[in-house]
Length: 107
Image (cartoon, rainbow, N blue to C red; front, side, top):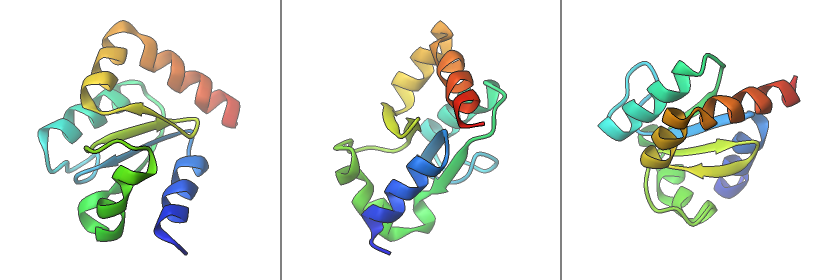
């Protein structure tokens, strides 16, 4: 499967998905750590991909949504942003609402 198809499949298969450095349990950078923690605080399951373990995704993900950095958070198949945007949405309560709606719609 083409790498762009693999990325697209991951994003569309999970209501909430993060491409990050490391894993939610063992993040490999501060930005990924803070972003994954915000997602965990929302209390819903989410999918993830450790971009450090997949060179093809690491190299090509920035082209997928024209977003150059990691982490990248997707809700309902759409990029919502990276660390700063995700944390800002979390602090305002917007992230929780978006995640709750996405998970409910997928059930």
